Length: 367
Image (cartoon, rainbow, N blue to C red; front, side, top):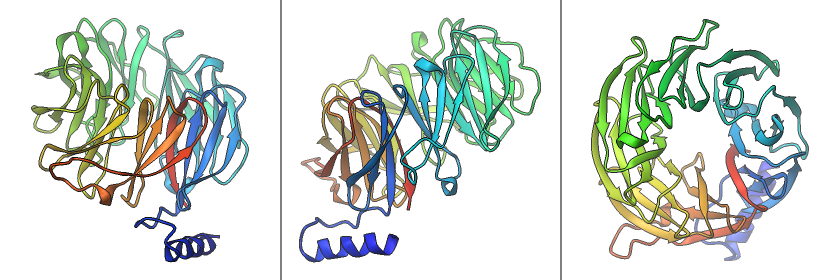
């Protein structure tokens, strides 16, 4: 199968039917709420291969931590359901009903973690056995969740402005720590030694030590933090939010703020590539994506992609940035090698692929 697909691409290229670029030998899964389905996109041909019907509207899509597993999980929060799917199957593999509506989902090792504000719960699912392990009662309605990949801890921000740590090895949750008037998004540092927490009303990122569960420092920002994106190597945290049409850079290990760079009107979701070292930022109101050089800390390109761009994924071979357009229901493909830093600051689109109404999540797999 793989050889056949590669051979077909080579014939197209020889016939002059494709631009430079070899495609990626793999697939993207894209959840579409308006279509109640997950589109399967062939990234070698950049065409829709098929779709996986879902019983309800998906709200999120997360990948299994092991790429070899070739599994993803479609979250249908409105009906408290999670479905296991694969690019190799046109139907749901397994389905699990939860005792409450999942608001945020994270995956670490062979477990899926979810929080539910309407029940004040943190739930844990064993992905291998496909069964709930336990449900933990939280001190207040949860806002956001993260799970360390290095230490046995989960951390949850609460609506009361407190932070609560939960051991993932079976221990009881720790007492909540009062932090600020309001807490938002949260991310563990890559070594698990601390967590970085958004304080929207304070225009700050607070750093808490995982062992002592105490605030170490508060980093002031030029914006109100809403979205957090941790760079792939864990060396930088990128922050977007209200107040400034830009992205703030925080160094988690040095616990300092580098700078804030302009990035289009109300920048949204983010993703980073390794080679070259770029940060891609969606601008939903402008229908564009801003490309920022992390090395030089300068904008290198801005490209129009479609209506209301949202989630962004980078193919594992670092060839393409895949941008999900929520408004226009399609996938915009940017060939990273075609981005040429200079005066024009433009990155031409490689192609567009229809994916279904109201797409909300994307995962990428090798063939």
